[in-house]
Length: 127
Image (cartoon, rainbow, N blue to C red; front, side):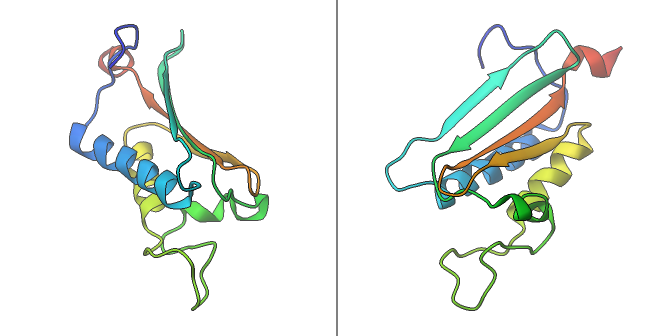
C-alpha cells in the first residue's frame, strides 16, 4: 500500500473478495493484451477511493445500473460470449456497501469501463 494512503477499517478477506471480483471483471471484459489500471486515492474527506479501469468492450449507459443486480448479465442470451453467473458485481457491491462505501461505473461502448468504489478511512470509523 502506498505510504500516503490512510488505512481503512474492514474485513480484509471480504474487501479482498470485492477487489478480486472487480479485477476478474476487468480481465474478462478487457481487451486481450490491454492493461488494467488500478488507482488508490486518498482525500481530505472521510473516504478512500479505489478505481479499476479496463479498456475493453464497455457497458452501454442503459445497462450500467443493472449490472449490480444479482444474476444480471448484459450478454444474457443462450449464445453468450462470456461465461459467469452474474453474481460478481452484486457481491462486490454488497461487500463495499456493507463496509459503508459506495460503488459505481463509468463506461462507453468499446472504450472500456472504470469501476470506482469508496471505503471509509480507519480514523473515520474509530471516532
